[in-house]
Length: 314
Image 1 (cartoon, one colour):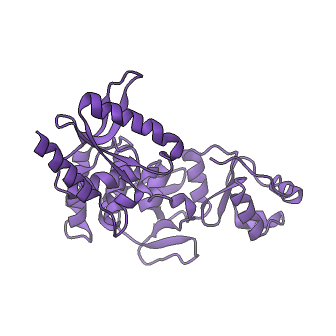
Image 2 (tube, rainbow, N blue to C red):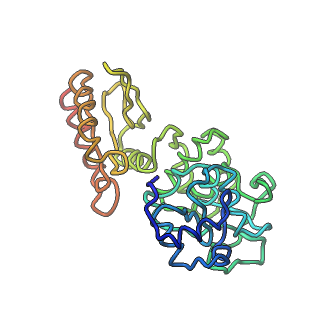
Image 3 (cartoon, rainbow, N blue to C red):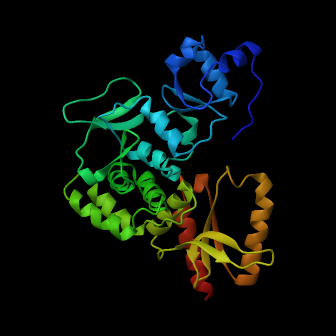
C-alpha cells in the first residue's frame, strides 16, 4: 500500500468527519461537503480506498472479510446474490481478478431473483438460478459459495481469467479439485461448460499469482507435461521455490512481473537461477508480461524451444 500523500488542510478536515471504522457511500461523503473531485483526490493520495463503485473506506481501516461484507452490503439489495469475480474477491481469492484490476473500480457482479434486473449503474446484474447449496448468507449478504463461484467463473469468464480463478478459489481449501470437477456435471448443456470441463482438472491451489496461472496455462497449451507448482530447491542460504516445473526433468518456468520482480529484485532473481542452473542442472524459462499476454505472446514457443534443447542435450 502506498503511503498517504499530503492534501489541503480543508480537505483533511472534511475527511476527519467521515466514519473511521466502516465503509461509506458517496452520498454520505456529500453530507460533509465532499465533492466527487475531493473523493478522487483523496483516493489518488492514498487517504481513501475505492473498492467498488459508490463506496469508499479510509485507508486506516483493516481489510478483511468483515470489511468486504460491509462494503457490499451498502450497495447490494438483500434479495440479490453476489457472484463471479465479486464473490471471489469477497472470499479472499484475489488472484481470480485480472492483473491490474486494482487500477479500475469494478462494477459489482450480482444476480437478482427471476424477473428483476438492477439498473443503478453500480452493478452488473442479471438472472441466474441457484440451489440452496449454492448460496451462503454472510451477515445478511447473499453470496455464492466458493465451489459455485468456481463453476461460474470457469464457465463464463475468458479462458485466462477462468483458469486463474479456478486456482485462486481452490487455494481457499473449502473443496478439492476432484469435487469441483464432479460439480460441473450438473451444468451439462450450460453455456461455457466445455471450457470449464477442459480447464478444471488442471487447477492447482499452489499457484502464486494470477499471472503464474496464465503462464501455466500457456505451458499446457504448448503440449508439455503437466508441471508441479512451487518446486522447492535447497540452496546455501535456505530453500527457494521455482514457480512451476518438472522436477525429474530439471525443467522449470518462472514469471517475472513488474510488481514483484522490478530492477531491484532482478539481480537476486538471476543469482538464484544461475545457482540452480549451474548446481542443479535446471533449465529455467523466464516469462515476462509481454511473453504471456497479448497477441504477441510467445511463451509457448519459448517453452517448446527450451524443451527441445533439454531433450537434444540428454
